[in-house]
Image (cartoon, rainbow, N blue to C red; front, side, top):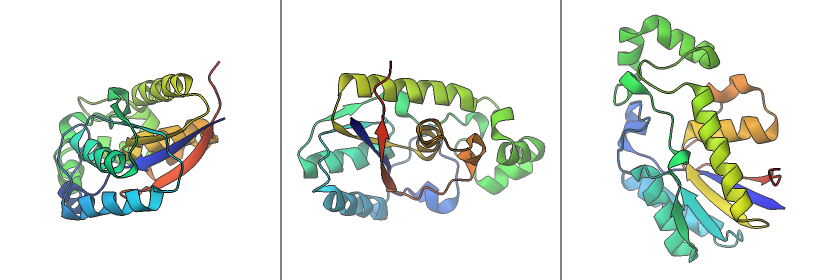
Length: 188
């Protein structure tokens, strides 16, 4: 049995501002660094054996703090990156609503039928993220594995492996340093 611990990165200033991050690369803010250290203390007795992280700075720094404090290996996995939000990246939500009112309304209410302009479709993100999870589970059987990633990848993993309604992907609440253990079947 393989257990995955889904972990969302610590806070950035863009999280506070309501600025769409996507694959843009803002760093953790001081509170985000503190959250990562607090999470490491909380996970100290969790039995985690290895960590995989998105290469985006906010996830990578969170993961490095966890790996250092837990004394476990850390590997980057590019397929765990956040959705590419195209033209929306680095813009405030209000700006996006103003510049792209119809597309944004559709993204909020029908995310599986909408793609951010110049960005990735959810099905593309789901394919790469689930492929990454399957490969990680195959390479680390019977381990407790931490995945340090982002809101949309975590939501897609939950939808896929927990049989959740796919339409929750935009509305599921996953605060910074959210974490949850889930059992993943060996792919095959």
